[in-house]
Amino acid sequence: MDDVETLYKENKLLARAMELPMILVNSGKKYYDCNTWACEFDLLQNDQIDSLSTTLIVSDVGVRTYKNVGFLMNSDLVECIHVSRTDSSSCGSIRNGDFLANDSDLSTVSELANYVKDNNATEMNEVNVNASIDSVVGLFINKCQYSNYLLKNIYAVKYMLKKFTGIDYPIYLYDFLNGKLELIDLTKEEEQELMSTSEASYISYWPDSLNEGVFEPIESSTYGK
Image (tube, rainbow, N blue to C red; front, side):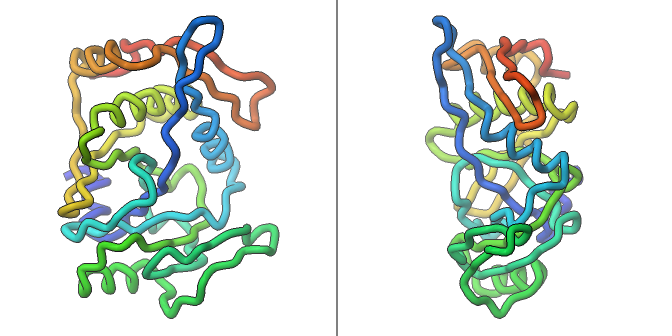
């Protein structure tokens, strides 16, 4: 069992939901706009992200996530500042002094995990954290009728993050109907076939730490084993 699956079994896996990258056109070339992802990971790399909204997913329960894609975090490597059984309508930032969230009688991820398991609580919960890049352990997509489309998008993100951070994050398929999590382990040939049917063949990102944007083709040879 790999580390991510171990964390999941131990109820220590947080899901940070993200928007799918938009597909745009530049000089006739379609590309994935990965700026939102790049900016968030730029903050993670520089220890400047705080009050981040995440959801604790619990093995065999099937907790709903806010969106169908995102990244996974090790709850042992973040600072939890607010824990809620449901969406706490959080806003603002601890660093800026304007963080707000609904009242909660929970204070730890462990308490939330016990509540979710004891009550089969599939409703989306919320855990606000301060975090750095070290806490990120993988990417995820939800299992649904659009999973193949989501996979193409998350592979573009995977490619971008490998270029930007130097880390080749694994991708996991999360089934929120039964709480199962499994590694998506494609061969190099399968990855190349997947990306050959993708809606775009370029990526673009412009995180805050760069003076100029990056626009480049996705090279399938970067993937694979």
